[in-house]
Image: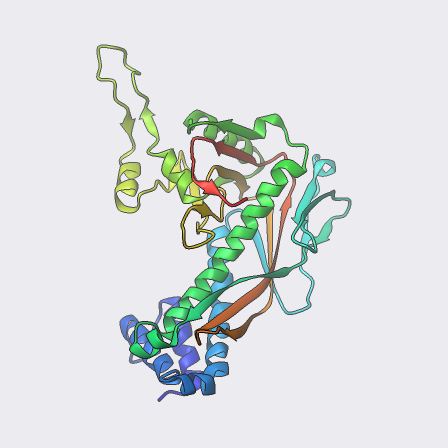
Length: 349
């Protein structure tokens, strides 16, 4: 049986997709699951080793979550990782439009507040976000569930929570500031020409732009027509001509991943409960953000992941994990929102 230090190293390699000496990537995942299974081979073994198990999960989450957030949001977001109790200070750039800059960030009770920026630096405070995973010990002992899978669930859940907080701050900024009318487009369908208008606004303030949207919105975009329907007149077939890359992307993943040179970053979607009727992320809204210069989204991840557990009356156990994070949205004139009201999926908001 490996030591806790060795298991931590296996978990980190598995999370990064790498392998230590004498292992292949596949062997790392198999070895990790076996070692985690050894630590929790019975209820008593789990209870005896649970704090070591939690330490492995915390170490992995604190390595994986910041990297996933930076990789996904780095094009349009400044991400700071600070220690427990440390302040995250961000600097705003000066310029001819500095007097118009506003900040929308989370308040003490999760309420997003907007205020005018009068200084060159500002602090983004953090609050706890997280989720839980439930262990059914009967399924656990039968081998239907294992700790490695639970670790993956917790890590993915924490990453998705950060995405959700960014979306909440962006949505709050829509109504919290006096936005230019041209920065908000609301239609009952997706019109490529209208999305291009928002992309051009964002590009004017950055060297490029990025579209931040949930999967329902991206699916409704469909392939972008290079030659629209009916362009050549009635003597030609009334069909559009589409980029082969869009067709391939939809065939392989179900979604396009770039719109007229603008990358699309998907916000991970989830449902409020097991009925799968209401989503956590508003499926109608896409955000078009500038990239390359000053980034309008500011994210802070503070301190280590925290874990505690709770035993239910049926002897199942819930493992709760949370991480402190904060999000702020800078300015209101250099990014846009597209609302597709034709998407009818219920949103829990």
